[in-house]
Image (spheres, rainbow, N blue to C red):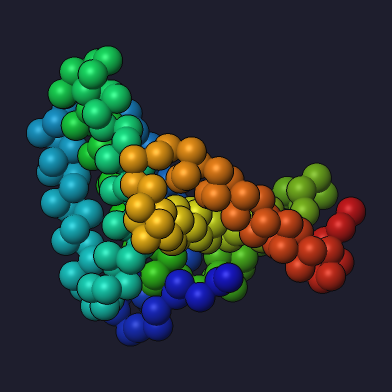
Length: 197
């Protein structure tokens, strides 16, 4: 399940996970609060430029970002219909930028570094918070975003092969079933490792 990390020696790879997590949180928050299309366009270009020094394979980057376009294929027309093209474009840019930034983090940061960063961040609160569990939860949440996107992509490919491209039910039901199955397998794996209380 956790195999997105691409090793490298770039500045982005070498940056401490805690610093990257902090910058990711700040950047996503700023993007989410931004309503100007011009500012979001600048943010999109800046995000794209962040990938250059990381030296990541284009296929790996595209594999993390492309699945969200399928979600936008449904969401953008609905948003356009009810709120206008500017609201639809704003929503689409926010979502793509957030997913791209999360992808940059997952592609350049091993899960163990994320766990260590969370332990460091929460160490002063260890009397009240189990830093190991919080770190594991965060790592799983970060990893599950592209995992869910992969499920959507695979279901779309299967749906296209069956000729059911126009059916929303043919997309929603398999995605929900597979997501629940994945969550069940993940739960079993966590129980097997002693995370059952």
